[in-house]
Image (cartoon, rainbow, N blue to C red):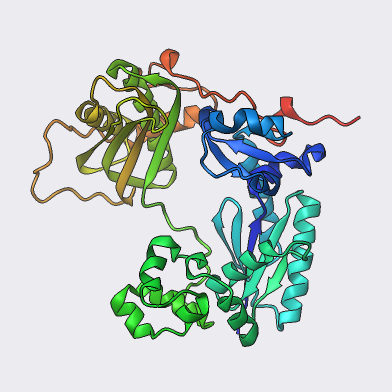
Length: 423
C-alpha cells in the first residue's frame, strides 16, 4: 500500500518572522492583516495567551504588548518566498508532490517499503527543511490524504515529540479515530458535524464504521469518500498540476472609512485591475464580475452589505471590460449615508483563455460592450513586469489609499536593500 505524507509548516507566518530574528524564538507573535486590521496568524505562545484568530488588533493591542508580545504587519513577499523554498526542498526528495497551500504539501512515498522507512524519511525531511530554510514542520504519514491530515494534527498536539507520526497499522488508526471528534476531520467541519451528531456519530471511529451507502444518500458522495479514506481506501490522489482557480477575489479593509462614491471608485478600479492580472496569469477568462462593499461590524453605526454582479456577453480577460463591469456593479450596490470599511472585486465563471464561445441568444445587459484585445493586454502586462507601471485612468493612482503596514519586517530574501547584516 502506497503511503502519503502531509508536510505542514508550524505557525507558518510567525515562523517566517523568526527565521532572521532568533531573539523571537520564545516570544508570542501575531501577524496582522492589511491595514493592521485583525490577527491572521499566531505563534503557539500567542495562542496560549488566549489570542483568537480574526480578533481586531485595536481590541487586544494594549494588553498584548504589555505582556511582551510582538506584532508584525503582514509581509507576504517574505512568506511567499520562504514557502517557495520549502516546496523546492520537498520537491527534490520525492517524485510526486502536490502543493496544497502556502504552508502545506502532500508527498507520494511510493518508494518507501515499510512504515519504519517512511518514519525515518519523515525525520530526515523535517531536519533538512529546518536546516536549509529555517522553517519548522510537522509530518503526518498514512495510507490516505485524510488519515495523513489526522496524523499531522495528532503530531501537532504531542508536546516534545519528534513532529512526525505514521498512522499505518489498523489498531493505531482506530485508536486515533476514537479520540478524534468528528468535526476535526478534514472536510467535515462544525455544521456538518452537528448533522452527524444528530445520528449519534460523534467520533472519527463512528464515522469510519458508518454505512457508505447511507452516508452517500443522506449527505453526499464527498462525505462517502471521507469515510472510505478513514478505512485506508485511497480516494483522493496526489495531483502534480495545480487545478485552475474557479474564483478570484481581490479585497481590502480600508485604513480610513469611505463615505463617498467618488472616493470608492478608484479603489474598486484598483482591485479590478489586480484581479484581471491574476485572471490572465491563470490563462483564464471570466463571464462575471461582482463588487462587494460593507461597513465595519465593530462600530455602532448603521450596518450595510452591498453586492452586485455583472454578466458579460462573452468571456473576457481584458482589464477595460472588467473595469467597466466593476464600476457598473459598484454603482448598483453603493448606498450613501454609510461608512464603508472594506470592498472587493470577485471574478467568476471561468473558461480557458484559448476557448471563446459566444451566447446563442444575446440577452445580457447591452450596456456592457466587450473590448477584448489580447495583444494589448500582453503588452501592458509585459511593461508592468519591467516595473514601468501602466495605470488605467479610473484608478487615479494619486488618490489611492495606501495600505497601512506600520510594523512590517524587512523583505530579507527578495529585496537587496533589506538583506540582513551579520556582526
